[in-house]
Image (cartoon, rainbow, N blue to C red; front, side):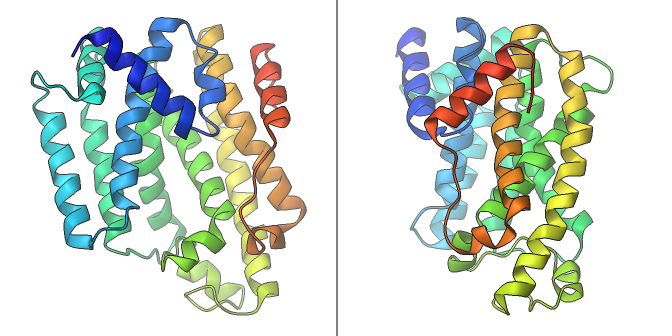
Length: 278
């Protein structure tokens, strides 16, 4: 398969599946946009395997196959792997980050629970910080002092927001991410099936932590060129807006999936392009 067609396939996956990230990715120059789309397309494949309908045995086997694919990027007709191989060569992508992402996805498949907040942070670094570190390579900021740690911090903030937004959906799948220690302190049972008021109080508490991680992680913007800063600012801005909604009414996450309108997302992206992250 030709590289250009492979990149086009990855960009289509990103437009179709990246409900929030695509608003930032489209602010990049075409070469970086294509490369980040290839990164996203493989990350999406990994997530889809972990969240799929097959048996856990099949899911783990699928994840092992992706791990092998990454270790040996050989000529193939798979458009995602073709594009990724080209992007890896052009931008020196740290492909080992995908291995960490797979580690985190395997934790999901195995139903891992988190006793402490530090335990949860370790998971967030695997499934979100890794994508941040891969993105740094595309942005040309991989070697800048402190950039990798800040990308990790911002990844934690984004993933915590995801977890808070999806409490109801994850609980229906038998997945609980919020720390058991925090749940106990707020009068919740480990499965978060206790009184709605207690769960809402727990969500409000975790929102304060997510806000702190955003405050640290957004310092990454100072290390990026203006287009990369706009890209990250748009992505982070959309998730910060979601977090603000949850903070204003924590119980909203117990009524269904919360999302921003297209107009709101475009507004955030426009402000990010102008240098504002709100």
